[in-house]
Length: 313
Image 1 (cartoon, one colour):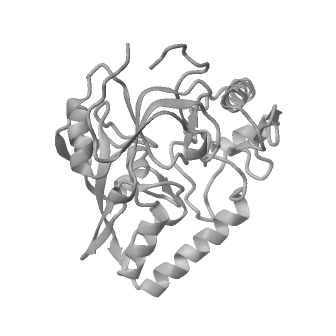
Image 2: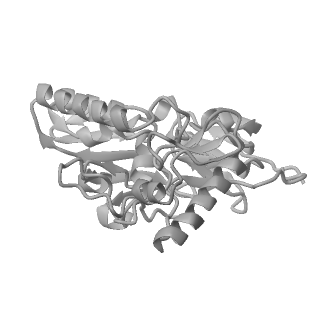
């Protein structure tokens, strides 16, 4: 049966391939890709959409594997109408599609310290959903509130307690789409903040494969925290160290590789399928458990079907 979708002012595309929208460049099509014009367009669409239709909010695809069979239902991807950044006092309000790096730079120019966002790949919506962090700072530490559109089309403002932040996660209602978030940071001299971000970028570029096709960190650290950047940081329970100790630095399956520069970066070396990437990740999890007795948990989100579903739409 053909699905009848609500009218929209944005763009609604059937059978839209998603590989070009992800950093790993893999994945099959979405039944539908919806790019809303603004918050009202999104709210009306969700309110009128059949409740049985699955909805998946997708950011810039920086921490995502879309499986080769694609995604059933509607994928929602926010664009230009959701990337504004405003600074007032020590608070920064950003649309969910605003890039984390842009937010950090805009805040620094205004003398607000959100420098931890500078090296986080992706956009604000994903940073909130995943409680992204680095160098000992997390989104939750600076979070004030988020505006979300719920699956029934209603808007709700969620505070820190309602978000249920934990290491690399937040407890959002099912189907909720983050459209805006507010953060606060300590005051700082713009020149000092800019210098700090430059130092962080240099450190990242020296240790991470920034020019390769990856999706950021593949697995969460069993230690339960990200790298602090301090000289006394310990690595025993860091995912990269466990992978390295298991002899899996540079290990491959087809065109998928655990990066030789940083073994916690799952890499598409060219032409990999989503199945190759995910299967390599599962092999790594198995072998790390055999080596250390510790179970690595995925940080990359994996969504969709392994194989195409006939007549899905």
